[in-house]
Length: 332
Ligand code: ACO
Image (cartoon, rainbow, N blue to C red; front, side, top):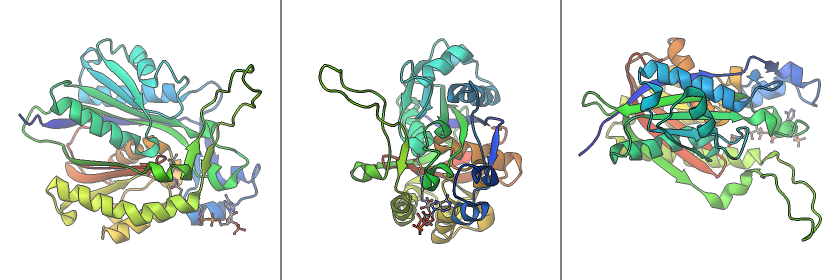
């Protein structure tokens, strides 16, 4: 039996503190002009004081849940795409469970960096279609500002913090909102973006310095990989969906670099008005960037519901994920 899935709610949350490109010139040898022309970024939201990615995730999760109208007690799973919650364990998903009182949910985190939302959708889709779950809350939350090297101008200017969410449930009509999902990983080039975990050998074995927990990225290699490989992966996913590229209303890509987004737009022959981007206001918020862009574009009337859309992300791993979806009215 094919169980149709409904995307029942989406949401996002960003911290209040905003850092502009000009602000960054106080601590780095950089300029608004360089950052804007190379990336399209003008500002980013960052956590401050005791704020955490978990709190952002809780607020984003509540929004998707409230839009869905599903009680927290009926959530079967919380899947969290988070690279930097407050703890490695308990998982960020468990911390969100406690905060929203989803007492019947099983909870776990996944690590797929900026592809985290799409990877989570793939797992959730499998759980629902197999009959193992009815209601699944996905939360993608990241605090990249806490793990970039703020002296490395080639990487730190690219990121911001934020959380996004999506509530999936069994459709109450025949419509399946997730038409296709395609997930890829290319571990052999994982060294292009890395972040080490903390931890060191027992001092009786050997003295060891604490490893640095910073994002380490070869931006040029990531750029080349994405513009060469991603369009083919997207085309294959669209093929699986049964739709043709020109039948799909919108492209909602991961917000890593405006030049990458424009390259995708040209290569896939999308009308610029139908390609969603808000990188100028948020920078790269990792796994949260697709849901943040989705919600904002709907709220700002750049995307009109109901519609079809390609959601596509890429990131450390290297991981790549694409979903072709239908979005109904009332999800935001
Ligand atoms: N301000 C001023 N100058 C800078 C800065 C800066 N912030 N950063 C680098 N430069 C300099 C470099 O030092 C270099 O100077 P040089 O020519 O004297 O050596 C010059 O600018 C050009 O640097 P490039 O690296 O060639 O710049 P490029 O045009 O390739 O842009 C960028 C760099 C923006 C990082 C680009 O390669 C990119 O966006 N890559 C993709 C990154 C990405 O998508 N990551 C996603 C994954 S994130 C995740 O999964 C967590």
